Length: 360
Image 1 (cartoon, rainbow, N blue to C red):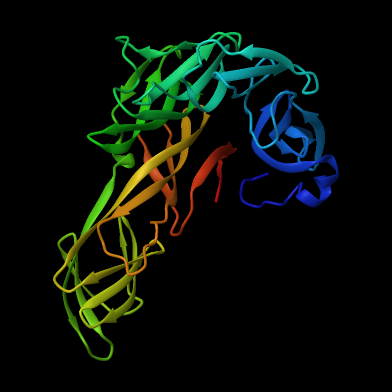
Image 2 (image 1 turned 180 degrees about the vertical axis):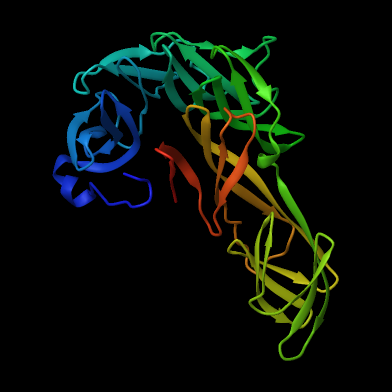
């Protein structure tokens, strides 16, 4: 109830008799909560009017087991799932009877990330285009016929590779988040709109900047203990085993100082650096989910690290979860959380004055 103390309210054992497999999305609707995911019979729907009691309602005919529908709560519940030629839709006013809408007109080429409902319109977010997969937002008044939103001058939301992940309505209009590839690098992207139809790209605030550092290993002195001279972005540090350095691009933990070689973990990813060599570490933000409450907006996501440092055993870099907040409808932002280990913040919600983040 306060976003700080949590307790389980449903699990596989208690719901197994109803064919429970997994819930992939939870949303509010008509004073209750809906869970959408997979059951043993197909796509599953659960409903709750209090935190402790969940009722298994049934399935959406036509959506096979293993395929999570994307849903939005408007006047009814709209469910969208991939079809052979694009996307198909279903709508329900009671969660039990689902009316098939057939193929959705206009979404044939959309790679769908999410759908939502705001102020009389359904929105479908993702990427479109046969080759370049540019960022795209579509909207519809009835959930059947969809038109692509554009910028104020009629251009697509992004010139090249990009994707819209989520959007939210604020006191000042709408904000959408995603990514766009610029000069071959995938970077966070934001757009805003007054009416939900015409969008303007927003300069990415400094809080979402890519962080990069340079490491130079000058020397190693063998003794008791072994000591290394490490330069981090021009600042010299004398480090030993278990030394820790906090940087904008991650937490460096020295794991071993040996002859001519320094071993370290950067946010749990192992690297090595030899005497006289140089390497870089970079963190690129990935924005995934939004929540808003008046002028207050919260974004959940992660930092995806890259590095030119060598590894003794190839290990993929570990992402780290992150949260960004704004208290003025998105005009200014600050980074309010960065985890210190392998993680990703997938969804975020505002509970009173608290922020609740769900991830892995």
